[in-house]
Length: 265
Ligand SMILES: Nc1ncnc2c1ncn2[C@@H]1O[C@H](COP(=O)(O)OP(=O)(O)O)[C@@H](O)[C@H]1O
Ligand SMILES: [Mg+2]
Image (cartoon, rainbow, N blue to C red; front, side, top):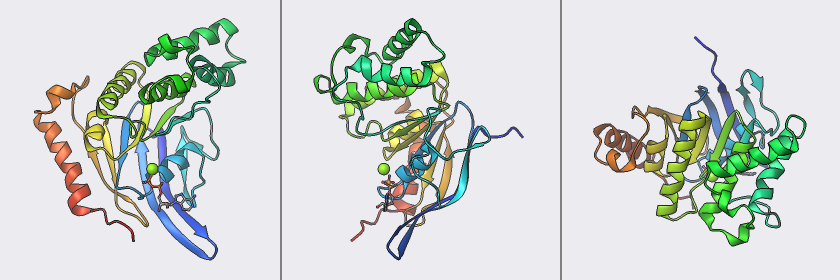
């Protein structure tokens, strides 16, 4: 069997405060193929962001390892670009400068100035933001900011794109537009994507597989669902598609029957 592109092996995480320690994640095993679009879904607080941050190299795992192309992940790096729910653009820079900063960082040695400019513009084009290149973050909408964040991440040509509820703060229509853009980019570039969401429809629409997490503490992978829907996917047609409905029900059942959210006191 071919080696997996990205591999999480017995990943666990405990946070300690003083003498007390809480185990957030326990023995997470996951293999992701190159080009695969994986969603991680689970109730609030189960440890999804913690897991993504471990893959990003922003948080150390307490146990286990993450391997990307057989190399152990220990630090953040441009091969794993992250897009967070709340954009992290620098407010004093323009849209163009926010992306070109990342481009300069990863390719100052490998691309000429003209090539870096072209690459910055290419990535702004990909997310349909070239028209706003001279605006500052305060002058554009939330959806546009997320687009720029995605352009910045893509411009680094990461091996894995990590998305932590990237559309979570957006209204439903903007969210739908961005989902369509991400699907189109994935179809064009074939990126390997790990996306966190708590939106069932979003997970089914975008993913090749949906990783469903049990509630914490000591959250684990409860089930992994294959989403056998042909691409390109069209949201309007899927609404009445039997396979789509089946997937949606499987995730809902997992989240609302088998692993119901119990609000912590
Ligand atoms: N730096 C930290 N220190 C202590 N506890 C943390 C820290 N980060 C996250 N946690 C705890 O870990 C659990 C999972 O958090 P998180 O990964 O953000 O969940 P999710 O993204 O699924 O909502 C929560 O109970 C949270 O309070
Ligand atoms: Mg989170």
